[in-house]
Length: 445
Image 1 (tube, rainbow, N blue to C red):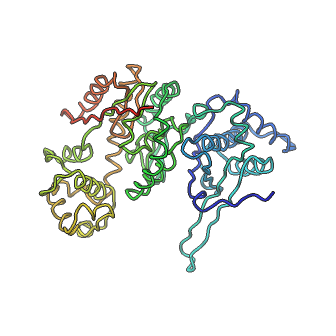
Image 2 (cartoon, rainbow, N blue to C red):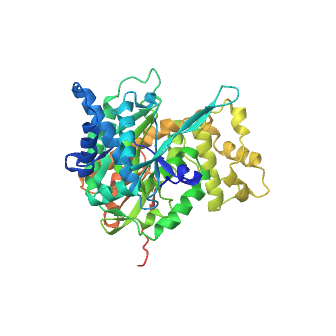
Image 3 (tube, one colour):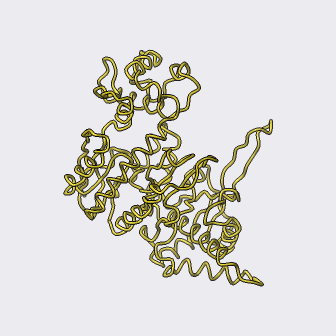
């Protein structure tokens, strides 16, 4: 019977292959053992691989199977595809090898274990730019049966220790990994080990709502929306890792937790080990850090200006501040001519965004040296250091904690402990931070 063709929506509803995904207990994994044995039986090699080549071959097969398993176990949509790059350059300086991935794809296809939607790359008519789509892979019913038969569940998948710290788009002068960055790896391993033994859940009735809500929120930021789609419903994503960009002082934030994909309105419904949770948040952290750099007190609520006091206008202010902070704009004149985002128009009503922006930038005139130069990545490094300090203090207390950049979720009974940890981590700045509380909510059965 001919294989049905996937729809455009199905192909779009994919997540990028995480090259760091592995099985938690690969030696006891019947699915992995079966696939490896089948592939070896077809190789007919005249000589064995070197130890290094064998290690990369094994890592490649395991990574592909772990990603396919994660997609098949997705609680929001078990029919999601995995978007896999078959560009050799994508695997430079990684544990994986393109040849092994191609071999694995061929074997899984021949065994009827995956559906394949080939990727493509097309050049514009002028030959300057190109566009395309990565190859999509999806588990067939046969592979899903094997996953279920072998008892693979969300905790069967984890993040390889070698991939706990990532530097993307490294510039030539980035240099070697600094000691203070390397020091965060053992902490992440300890936190991940604790999370592997922690039951993190949200009521099943929330998933249909979350599917709609994540789509509605995608206008905010393309990269953030992509990460949300990637983690949405993926309960295997419970291993934390850090991501830097360009150099070791830009970014460094912690990613990897499926709870990070939840809209903020849904997070109060999370439970940890069956108990209700509370979220504590460093309020207006990035504006505060910039005003500390400027040596000035921060104005009351930096996201509100003029006569506007509504939450909708505060959201406009937060979006505006983040755009000014994170974008690299050629000149001050250009960022003062920035256009409204689609979500800004309704709250502003008849007020031109240019007029609002002038008021907003006047309020934050002292921060002008940091606006429009992409300073956000440096602030992300600062908040990642804070987050790691909080995680370290909570790990010392044997308390599981779910980080979301500058906020943290714990069981309600550990709220006081978390607050103390957040205040202690902030002592480096010489002030007591404002910490906002978001309480638990429950859904009746």
